[in-house]
Length: 262
Image (cartoon, rainbow, N blue to C red; front, side):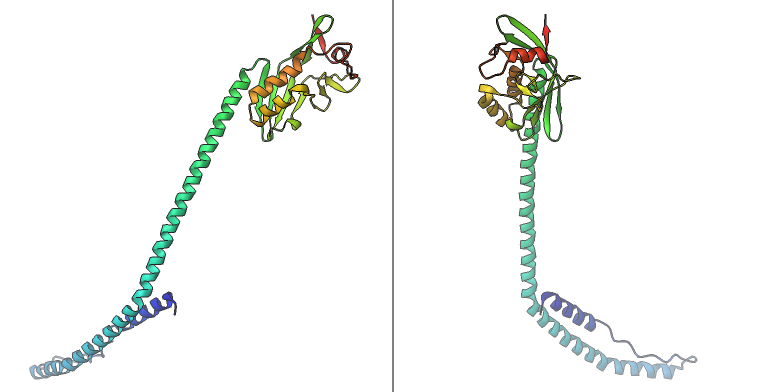
């Protein structure tokens, strides 16, 4: 028998034995009683009251003994249930403490991440040639002012290659980083390049800076990463109009896509 069933039976027994028997109906008097009648009824009431009281007391004592036995038999089950409930309460308190600790750890990590992002944002905004810094759900976008690329040929010339947008993916994967020209009408050279180092799709030729750029990207050093990308977009010291032996003529490319600065 389950603990709940024992409780239910116990309550039923107690309720049944605590109900006072319904008294027998009394005949209402039809007129004033004489002293003799009144005295006789008092004697009869006293006579009848004694055995009724004794019988009721005996019945009550028997019922109480029975209830005492039931309570004694049920006590261990009630005690065990009480212990189990107390243990469940303690387990719930421990679980709640664990959840609160995990919540605090996550909150602290989120706070630290927001603080690092705020600092990176401020450092990016302070870099030269940066016009705007934007953040959306998938990427960090850094927009520049017009960039001037210096070409070291027989003479040093300077070329305005326009403003650019540097798209840094959320996963910081250098292979997914793209650079796009923000000119109203993008100029493209005969080979399909919009910059000596950037093709029409925004793919960048990183050259010997690739390893350094990957480290900056993997460690989320966005200010360092952007500075290196700006260096690639503005530095033309290695390239001449004669080409570099690979068929790329960077100087001629600049004449197609840039405006020479006098």
